[in-house]
Length: 313
Image 1 (cartoon, rainbow, N blue to C red):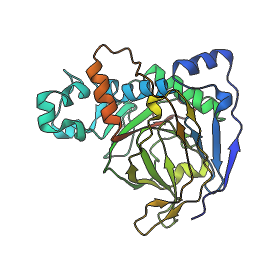
Image 2: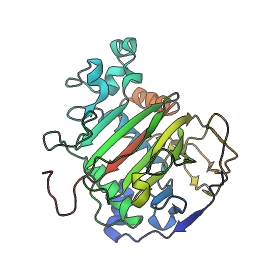
Image 3: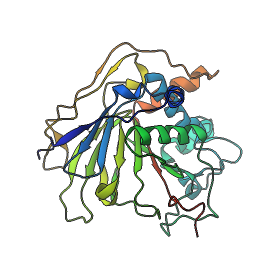
């Protein structure tokens, strides 16, 4: 399948104050961002890794050590695991957690408005806080991509193991379907399929690499999408000093197994950089790097409310 039809988008400007905020959340200068709009899927945009290596490290750390904690919701409750007195990260590296295989049990965490997986709805009775750094990150990314006034109100952090998949689905629980959906990838690469409003539309496929940001808006916001495969890659953009952007232009052919072939999306990575997280426990940092070498983390952030709303009816 020829998937080369993309248009480079000029980044929108940030104020001096916002540029300082961008540094705080691990972003490189906005003027260097490579943003592409996929013309075959109106509203779909890809930002090729705009994070510094240290920035990726900090977001990986938040997703592993901070977000899977009470009062945020996780799928671990279905396994009878209570995190009120510990964190998932500490539990899965304890003797008991290792014996139970707790590390592979974590599949998702919700923040802000907690998505009800049974009713597919949000509720004011099931609402937490979106961490301020995540709010800031989303506001800045949305603005550079041309979406002013985006509010991060609900987030789902997905944890993919090397054999994980995500079935075709649409995201349509938010009252505000006009606002974009922001998707951040960290760790191993994913094969991502994006189709149309019905499953009868043949999907297109592309790679999402560590640090890449995908924005779904307009028609693509209602398209069926899926992750059929996680790809382990040798590059470690979260652990290098210099990164060069890849070239999104590529021909993607799906073989009989639905996999990818002949993708010329290339990235180049140079010197390794010592992890700088401020953590005292060096062993935690080593284990974090071991985890991300075999897993993928995906943060999906949405605006739930319409601009005129301050709460759900």
